[in-house]
Length: 402
Image (cartoon, rainbow, N blue to C red; front, side):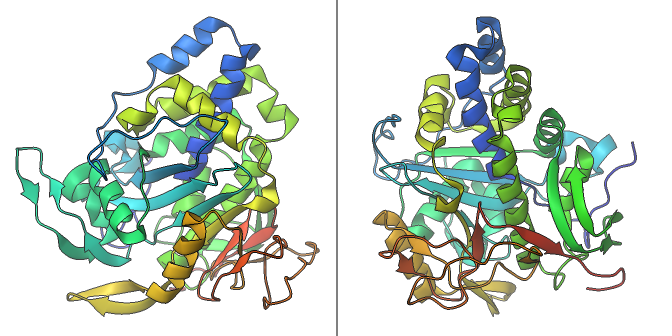
């Protein structure tokens, strides 16, 4: 197989749908452990889980045990750009970066879930993290996708904890091959493409219309940057959120979640391609999480981008946090308040043709998401995103664009 091309310089690498794989893992494991598949299948899935990684304690203690019955859930999911060492398929990789960083928060009453995407070029304080030789890397200001290089998965978690003020006891790091196995297992993920995609950087082309993505095509769709929107990583984030929304909807269909063979293949595809925090390697923990999230309606699953604006800091060009908007977002999340989007879905997507017009809360403007309760916190328009219920389409661009 011809190695997948990288876009731009070697160090500019490729995000993919990592959070979706965690959702697949916990949901699929529930089906497996509930008796849909023989006990040997449960053992096989569990044996495929890689050794865990100890996180940096936020308060000096062990993370609490979370059950389906009570408690909030905070999980960080990051995607490495290493290609898992598969040079034949993905080509020679450059720096080891976390080019996708997402935080999943499930409310304490398990009625809502919020997924926050942190753009890879977000310039933030990187935490001081252990260097593996008894010392520590010093704290510094850099792009968030360098945290993996400096201190692995624990450093990403600590950096996001410092940035958001949230405690994150669970984390997972994923690779390319999980997307291939996942999309194959469920028979592909169908997405809407409003304008044909032609990305010369990675050699990826996709016609307009409804497209079902399988295997490496799904990876390419999530990597594409220069062939959609304004050619920025921010457009790619909104494209990933479109894919995640479509994936969540597909997973919860009877032909997927109710199919024991599919459930097993999903669980294997995920667990064999993820490095988990030690707190997340227990199958019982995954099952309890799945039980907590399985009944959340699509309207209450909200994907948002961390609010940002183009700028420079510490000699770096990228995007800078919009602190007032971020404070509003995370104050609401930490208080388990419902949130209402008032911004757009992002520069990489548009509303799907003939999609139902969402009901707008009285104090919101041009809200692209389904109507949350009246008590919802109205997020600033600088916070972009969509709900899992919302139908959106990728806004491609002609070859030779950005």
